[in-house]
Amino acid sequence: MLLAFSLQLPTASPPAPETGKPVPAQAAKAEARAPWEAAWSRSLGTSDDLLLAVSRDHVFTASAGTSLVAREADTGDVAWTHDARGWRALGATSTMVVGVAGNHAYGLEASTGQTRWVTETTGPDQHLVLAGDRLLMVSENDAIIRDVVTGSPLGRIGIDGPTAARAVSPEATVLAFADGRLASFDVAAGLRLWQTTLRRPPAAIAAADDSIYLAMPDGTLQAVNARNGSVRWSFPLRVPIVGEPFASERFVHVVLLDNSLRTFDRRSGAMLRTDGLGHRPAAGPWVTGSSAVIGLTTGEFLVLDPETGRVETRLAVPDGERLRMVPVEQISMLVAQGNYVELVMPGLSLLLRETLAALVARLDPARFVRIHRSRAVRIDLIDQVESYGAGQYWLRLKNGACLASGRAYRQAVRDALGLQA
Image (cartoon, rainbow, N blue to C red; front, side, top):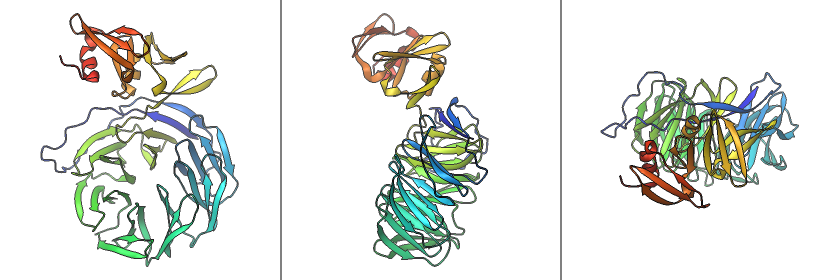
């Protein structure tokens, strides 16, 4: 069973260490603190090990005994299938999905399944790493960089041992070998840039800008200078890391087997936040566009924004016998209607069975502000503010509506709009 879920993570962050230096993480188990609900579920019809990849609009599944199936991310409906069998590796970008089946690698359009290219693999044990418009294919014999859209080879290097982890960035390709060597290559030029030896090979690596992030088997997260391999910082988590670290503009994140997501400052290595996932992570995270996807042992997966810890860019709202996916940027106002919330949009209103307090807590505070016990509004629609009474305001929206704020929400209004007390 495959279930698609959305997750909101809390905004409160523990204070960073005063010195700005990494300190050991607390061993206390992270609690699940976030409400989440299923958007759709589908039976997969296979008992084989599942391959899963995610693009901007689709979820892809395949296994050794099944076809490659693309499903609409909003509804779970099948968009297309590819009938090859024996799938051994799978990856996706926002526009392409790449998979290895048998002795061939396939490059397919994510939206239609149309075959863009096919090439033979160079060994039975193939690993795929996709980053932007680059595809890294690693076997026990070589590493090849290809253009992900055309499949054209951009460079190749021979390698002299099995690899434990791999990463690719616009500047270099980084390979962690099973014997503990960590090396950076300019594959297009066929050159090794540097090499260093670790006490043990990392379980996973990720490259981002001028840093390489290593997930070590003992639960340590380590940042390495991408130019020379020197260690920038190290943080002992003492809990196994699941999958690869993933980086956003300011942060690096890791998923841990204690059911938590940890967020670090990319430069200093200070741990900034711990968020509960609700269940044990099993796969991922996969990064697609501005989102990260985490698979859970329950068969569900969670989608979040790495910059904020939130994923509520769309709400699943019942509309008759179907679920309508409503982008939050289309919502003007939220109005409490008992145990329901009315989602007010231009020319349309929908009811969602949830309290206003619970829904506002799931939304980005930089986007919506609660101004009254029965009402919240989208901040960018507020055009004029006029003070009246003790801590109350008249808010005029761009559509002409004029709303009064409640006294209990004066601080929330001030904070959202940058008003002085």
